[in-house]
Amino acid sequence: MDHEILLTVMRKAALAAGDVIMEVYGAADFDVKVKSDDSPVTEADERADAVISDHLRAAFPDIALVTEEQAGSHDVSADRFLIVDPLDGTKEFIKRRGDFTVNIALVENGVPTRGIVYAPAKGRLFYTDATGQSVEEAGPFDPEVPGALTQLSVAKADNAALRVVASKSHRDQATDDYIGKYACADTKSAGSSLKFCLVATGEADLYPRLGRTMEWDTAAGDAVLRGAGGRMVRFEDHAPFDYGKAGFANGFFIAASPNVDLKAP
Image (cartoon, rainbow, N blue to C red; front, top):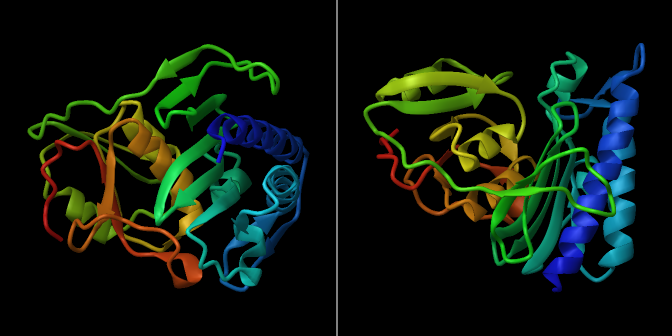
């Protein structure tokens, strides 16, 4: 795998998907359908999925591709695959709150080694470079020429004053109870995979998720977090979090700076 080519393709695909998403977002109205799992889907999800799939399949025809909007056709047992959520945070998109992202990742041997997270409404673009180091690119975003890059690194957390980020649309009492085990200086809410990126940039120290997610929801953000020196572990035993699971369903997890003193469930 040529990681320079991968980065170029993923970046162009994410930006192109962001363009079609923002076209729909800027419309006076758009249709919302409900999928079999009761989650919402819009024209933006479907158009972004098509754009990204076209880019990735043209460049990497021999690598398995998993996308949320084509999930029913997937049975990946490959050691390497691409995984995509074309519009993560559809509920935020529908409510026009801006906290939605385009997520593309490469998974190798159960680990997301490269990823890109683009938040088009917020003008933020995060990704792992060809070496695996995570960066944030400054806009405006030219598909052909990357802008100025800032290397990302998680913060050295103060366990007596942690900064916690939690889901905006899926926060519940169990999450609040778990957060209550920590000494928190600040707790904020954010949507989609932006929560991983806030830990990766050092804007937060801890992101616990006690709820249903799928691998396409987390792989790109997880890759960005890992490339900034962070970690993602299983909630129940703090063991390494892996990908390529049957059905692509995730268990609960914790994403954090490495020196956060993780609490037991």
